[in-house]
Length: 130
Image 1 (spheres, rainbow, N blue to C red):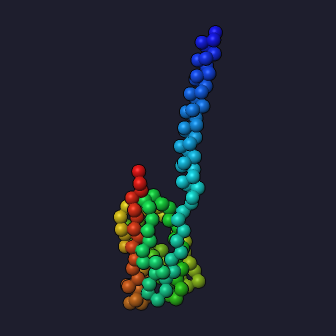
Image 2: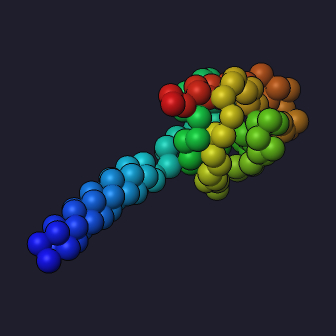
Image 3: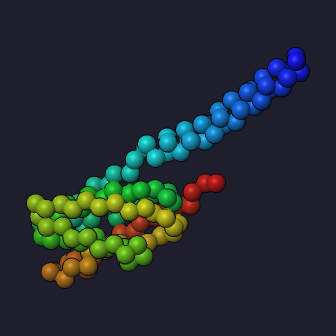
């Protein structure tokens, strides 16, 4: 009888230990997703972006708010198939996941003015540490 009770206690302790490990793993994931998207305010004015380089980490969710201050401008990253347009007084907000490491050019794809062709920058996605 004592052996049976001891066996039950050992199983109970093992079960609690396993649940604690599983819970810790889920807690880590919850903390990571609870951080939310990385917020970036990107102003476009006089043929330049307010940031010419955006640094993020692979798998970050990026939320960009594009604000055109003078004339309509766009934010385009071909590798991510993103092309968003903002007009003065009408900012646009969008999200994407930076799912692959590398350096990706971004630019204004509008042809309203020759100066738009000068609007360039780069998204730098660092590999996630494993």
